[in-house]
Amino acid sequence: MNKDRIEGNWLQVKGKVKEKWGKLTDNDLDVIEGNTDQLVGRIQERYGVAEDEAQKQVEEWNRSRSKTYTAETDDLKRKAS
Image (cartoon, rainbow, N blue to C red):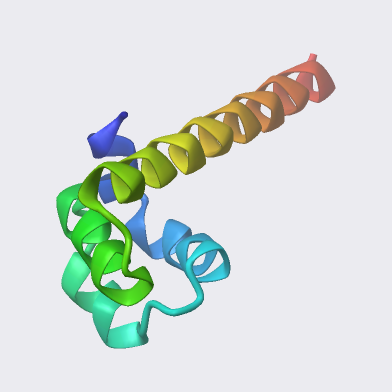
């Protein structure tokens, strides 16, 4: 998992996190501030899942987000050429 990418883009990612884990409150998101360990902990609390399950969800979400980001970047590069 690329923790720097989540932390560096937190303001942009915040909405996507809220879409995925709707039980997280705005206060939760303010506390998390892009810290993946905090995100995992809050998912555990709000959804009542084990740490390994919350970690798995975050990793899968981050992978899918990375693929989308890469595809969008590649598309922009092609259009610019």
